[in-house]
Image (cartoon, rainbow, N blue to C red; front, side, top):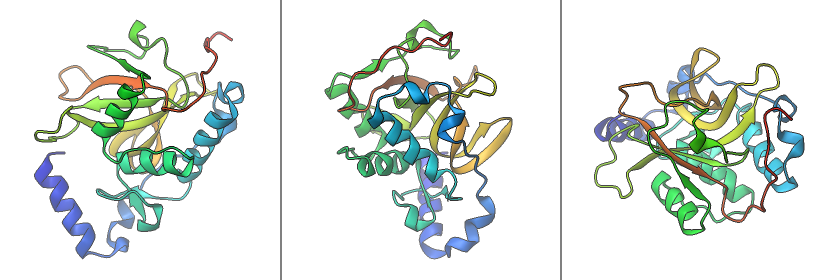
Length: 216
């Protein structure tokens, strides 16, 4: 989505009632017990993920410019900021400032050119980590040009596939496009896409977590 369209969407949201967008909401949810690694995480990580998953059951739409469930929906960075502030972290608001926050605190792992979630660059990825993209829409002169952020959940018990939580309009979960605050499949961008996955890292202030092996 380019910047003019984002601005148009925000203007429409301010003018039209929330009910006008209700039909666009299409979300999926999981329980903490559905995640392979959940029980092995520190209590604080469990708390963050438990709250994040609770939002996915509230039928919240994707609402550009919002960081509060009371608006009926939130955007990607607004969702992450809301989850983190509710969990006691002083999270910045925009995707790029959250990226810089992780970088400043030394938790950021930069990723370049990954085409698969099995890329060795992602070997340190753990539940609760922040996930960052560039190129999902035109951010103008934003520096760095981080445009999207979500939280990694881990792997589903049902099929072992990696999943994440956040807000989006059009990302997929189990083969279906989702629109709102939802669980999504964690995948690398398709070949030829303008979007690229650029990094991940623990939430600043989270205690060190034990390494997880998918074979555990």
